[in-house]
Length: 168
Image 1 (tube, helix red, strand yellow):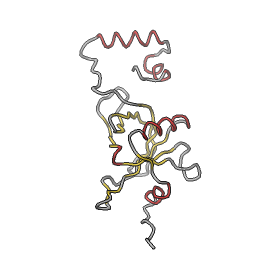
Image 2: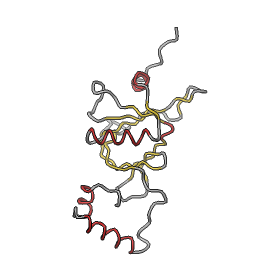
Image 3: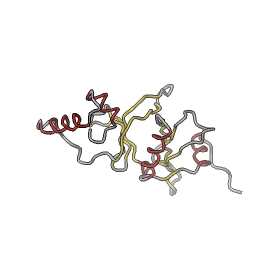
Image 4: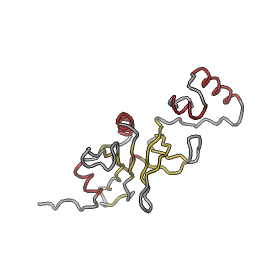
């Protein structure tokens, strides 16, 4: 709760008042075994829309945490059981140009290709969408601390499942 945005605190605790929030946190921590802080706090967290990989590919709003070089999708904001987890060293980050985006603030995790075997450790792209341009910039900055950015031409080729161009 310490790192939570004020609008999220209002939703969960019913107040924006910083003193009331701090008091509530201290009482909750003092309550005993119910308070189990993570061994490692999230580097960054927030709501993102994620495109489903099943069926039609609906977009759902999910709570995401950037933690120890992984992007973790939680069951709920207070949950400690991850719904999904992506190791960022297996992906590159691609932010599409406004002309090629399917959503306004979309970014994609694209699987890296293993240079020795020309195979991917992971086979599917993971699509996310932020709520605003500022949030997209913040997520991009935070993710680039843990991963590389994709080359746009290569990323579009991978997304469209096209083979690399022939070598002359």
